[in-house]
Length: 310
Image (tube, rainbow, N blue to C red; front, side, top):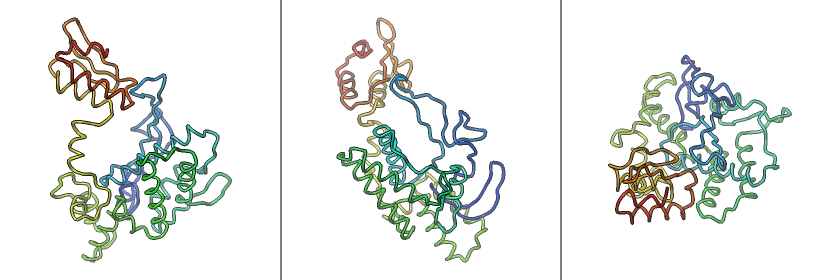
C-alpha cells in the first residue's frame, strides 16, 4: 500500500485516520469481470496480450500507485515468485482466509498494526504469518540461483522482520510507512489534530509527480529512500527496454516510423513495397528471441527487409 489519511466507502467519506491501502475501501467482490461497479480483487477478463494457447492473464487490481521503487519491486517480484511456486508445486497448501474482503479492510485499517486475520476453521493468525507461509514456499520450491530472485527473497524476509519488530524500520523502503512517518512528524511539530485537513493535503502532496515539489521526491533526494535505481538507467529503459518485446516495437518505430501502420501488444505492422508486413509479438519473451529480432531490425535497410520476421 501507499497509505491514506482517510476511511471511505464507495460513495462517501467516513472518518479521518490512517490506513495502509488507498484502495482497500472500494473492493466488494473476490473476482469479477467488472472493474467500475462492485470492484473485484481479481479481474477475470482474460486478455493475455500474448499467445492465448500458452498464456492466461492474472489481473490483480487491488494494488496502490506507489512512488518507492523498492515497494514496486517487492509488490511485482513477490507476486511473480508466488505464481512460480504455485505452478511448480500445485498441490502445496497455503493458509486460506475465511473472508478475504473483510481481512483486506481490517489489515489496512488496523491502528495498532497487529494485522490479525481469521483463517478457514476459525483459526486466528496474522497477515505477517500468512506472508511467511508464502515466503517459505518460495524458498522451498523456486529456483533462487538467479541473483535478482535471491536478493528479492532476502529483502522480503527483511521487511517482514522489520514490520514485526518496529514498522518505522521500513520508513526507508515502504511508501505507507514513509508517508506515515513524514505526516506524523509534521503533525507533531504543528500540533495538529487527527482530523485536520492539512494531513490529507500532505497525503496527496506525497504523490505529486513534480520532482521539485513532491514530498516523496524530497525524501528520495535527501537519501531517505532505499533502492532508488540509477537515473540514467531509468531514462535508458524508457527508450531501450531491455530484453522485452517493447524493444522490437520501439526499434521499428525509431527506424521506420513512416511505414508503421499499427503497433499493439501482440504485433506491429509496417507497410512494405509488396504489402503489409505483420511482425507477431505473441511469443516474443525470451532474451534470445528479442535479440534476434533486434539485430534483424538493425540490419534492415527498408521495411521490406523485415518480412523475414513476419
